[in-house]
Image (tube, rainbow, N blue to C red; front, side):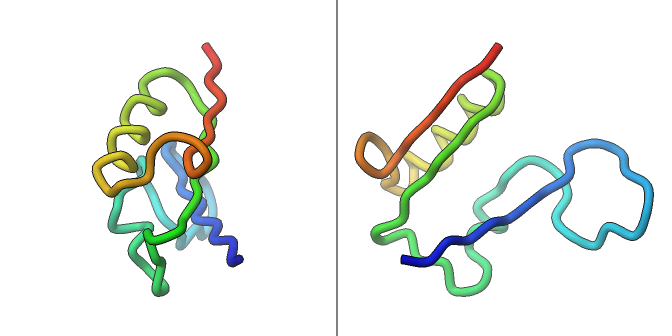
Length: 74
């Protein structure tokens, strides 16, 4: 398998960051030949983030075990 890590800053930053900014979007995942077929997602975050990402991934068929894994925190 292939692992793709896409970091994105959601807060103000200092320095010369040239990577992604903002919350995770499908556009970010569709880069570099990403394939939804057979993909797995491991997500972790606060309630608002998790609700959004879960809906985003489910709309693309990535939901439920064994492909979707989550850990929530308050």
